[in-house]
Length: 330
Image (cartoon, rainbow, N blue to C red):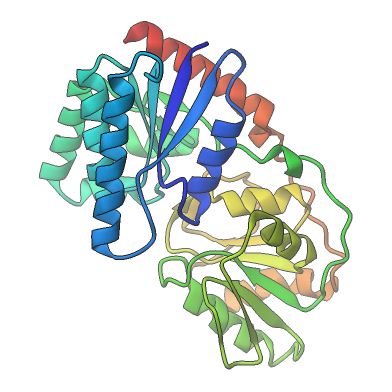
């Protein structure tokens, strides 16, 4: 049975790791899969050691006929994430193993186009190592195709456990933010929004991941949590807030929609169902206006946005075609 090796931050918190886990645990029919972690949370030195460890592991696999993958599936964001994956693409190509570069970052186009030299180098490397480039949506492919050759489109997969809307009692006062506490993800804005909403809705509070403590009564710190804990938070939330500066098809949004949880995202986010409510980036008044009918429903507002395009069976079929074509063309 042919094997795909997923390389990326599978042991680090975040949506990319979740995608890797789902794809590895549920490979396409006729395939088996394995994970190789190339990243850890920590210091620059810790990250470097994780990268070096992954390189050694890949060399061993490529040189061992019993462990050698038939295709290497690289999961990358922008910047240093790509420079690390570039080396894995080079190693795989040299060993005669096809490689796929699966682009997850919503800022990949901005990062590439920020430097002519960077863009030229990326295209040169992708051509030299015969990498097949995969993005998350047709709109993303359109945005990137002016700069790079995108070969395939494959949506992020939903965990099959989330493909049914569970019935749940929602807290009519709990807004939810599930991301690292970072200005790019909009954490400070989400806090400011919750505090502002309290003028008219004094019981509103923001349950927020990525922070361990907060002295404000408006903010409930959640830290990092398990997948089950995350699902519990999603199923009980009044609404999920995703005020990111940029992002492409956030997994947490798909998960929320699958559970019927209302979602509001910033207008900088793309590759989601068009029915997902958007609010203007960092515009407090517009966010409050979009949220008002959800808050007024006091927990009875249920999202009915269709997410079947992200069901695992559909995504498995897409990846089966991508893997098969990539191996045959390699």
